[in-house]
Image 1: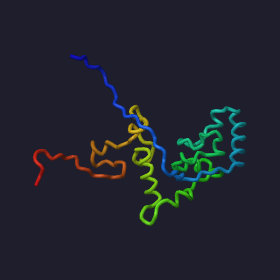
Image 2: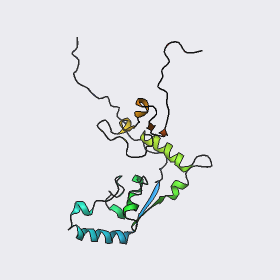
Image 3: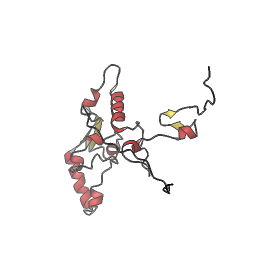
Image 4: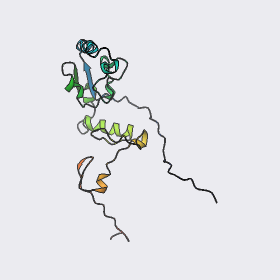
Length: 177
């Protein structure tokens, strides 16, 4: 008879990103007016007494300005179009849909639909407004799938896709005829 392990061990399926067959176009075109950005950085450097952490902090929580050159060369593939940078720095930043994104799809498939399916297939996640789940069980691959379990617990509560009424009934016994 084998002794059983005590405690909880989490089951995990390792996943690796597969290379795309076609390059996914950036959804948004993020641009900064470079001279105004440089002037603002110089002004902030003196105002905050060259405190590097403060001067180099940028408004994007998605990391669009986290590259080597910051706002001078934004990482456009990280932009989700939240417009926070434009709200905080309207005289410096512009965000608009990219031309390559606008060309996706056809008369039936809109660019939004194509991009959504593409994103779901490449990340394994459903499109969620907001940040999604980042707690203790969050992670890469299948662990990154975010679902709203309040739909099961409280079927009339607003779910991921708005107000959804779902049935939690279960048929017991033979299949109804």
